[in-house]
Length: 67
Image (cartoon, rainbow, N blue to C red; front, side, top):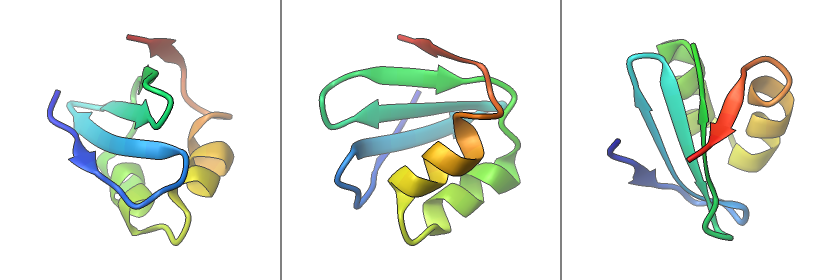
């Protein structure tokens, strides 16, 4: 999946394709979250703090796996 770099102290890059959100953390770990709607991805990119958005709006609601 193609990811784009983001300005965050905890997340290096993010990508989205067909409902799968992929996050690459600065520590090198990569996680995929399933069934994430495109508007949620757009809101993530527009958030003032990407890490805080992930903690509040992604992690509690979507299943994930390390890749």
